[in-house]
Length: 300
Ligand SMILES: *[C@@H]1O[C@H](CO)[C@@H](O)[C@H](O)[C@H]1NC(C)=O
Ligand SMILES: *[C@@H]1O[C@H](CO)[C@@H](O)[C@H](O)[C@H]1NC(C)=O
Image (tube, rainbow, N blue to C red):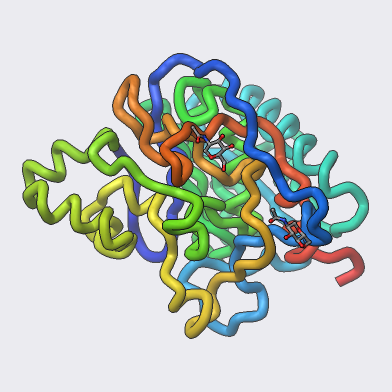
């Protein structure tokens, strides 16, 4: 899989080829909690001096451009981007000043503006069965590698794109919250698509150990897809203060992987603590929207 696990987080939303699963009921949320849908944060820390992940976008504006070969791709991506932004906009409402717009209404080609405009550079890739993007703003290095076919992750290009937008804005994978492990989540490590090839390379024991010890860093170092599933360390929350984690776990988040993401056909990878399946979230949740309001508040 052509996924880079380079510097910082180039978070992937990776391949699944299984057919769209039958809908799974979302778990109960504690609606009596005053925190319900108000604070469910898992995102970059916008107040940190140094972050290996990313920062908030200057002027609360994300401008995108496209690297593509075919003219038709420009229309395709414009359509996907508009629909995905609508999903966010409908939830964020007027409470945030975040803007998301193409670099130009007609000319979307990145190379025309490179070096002049701060942009989120989208590159189409029909080979990767995945999308990957940095979390937050990374100065001259804001990229999205995107496969627009509805054949992976949420099985829907607009939903997949909306997930990647969440990363660009500064949201992290909900399931990578340090406090969700092991109380809420579990990973069936051996069901990951790249488990067998890595086991062949470094030994089953070592791979199992990465999962057992929730060692995301080692997974990343091995180029193992578990790096997209295992939790960040508390160090990043408590000491380096690169991430913010607040409130209840958001089971409705568009930033949460479903159980089939990255799993071998017919199996489940990320599951609830009791082994049950996590369904596909197709909408931006209220909690996701609230995070955007926190990162990009109105009038700031
Ligand atoms: C597993 O846990 C979820 C969420 O806590 C719950 O809704 C579900 O009923 C449980 N499933 C089983 C089989 O225990
Ligand atoms: C739901 O939230 C309320 C208020 O925060 C809390 O008192 C209660 O214990 C919670 N219930 C559960 C089942 O977590």
